[in-house]
Length: 170
Image (cartoon, rainbow, N blue to C red; front, side, top):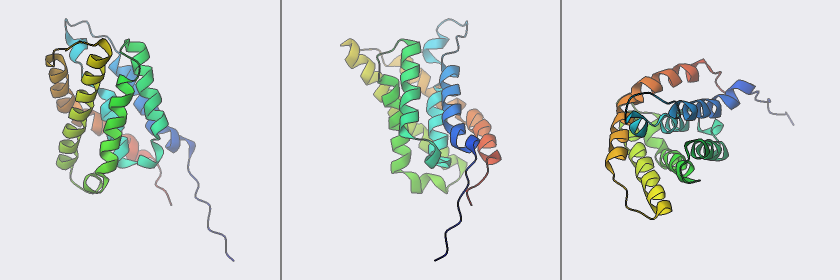
């Protein structure tokens, strides 16, 4: 009986996706001194979760995504679980549409991101509204959604460079 070769995975390949999602969460929390901008700033964490879920889903565990969402909720002061639920929804969308998204052009990936970001925005808005037991205006969330979809190519390009620098599994 011949033993199968051991597949060696570098430590940075395993932590890069979760580390960049946490960095994106911290980027989400960056305060910009422009009146009203922080309420509608692009959701960089959703972008990072989406990209890694498409490119390297085996290195983006649900527990890491959940922890990043909880971190964002804790620091931002939003109801605990709202951000985590939104990020997990984006990851779950990619999981459900993986065959469509993995082998297509960037335009298809961007369109898929627009759907995933809409799903995350609606879930986040609904979770916050439910938690506060109030009907919230959808306009700040709608503006954040537009800015998130518009900013996606820039962050995706940066994450693509990181992903392409990672070793491929044997």
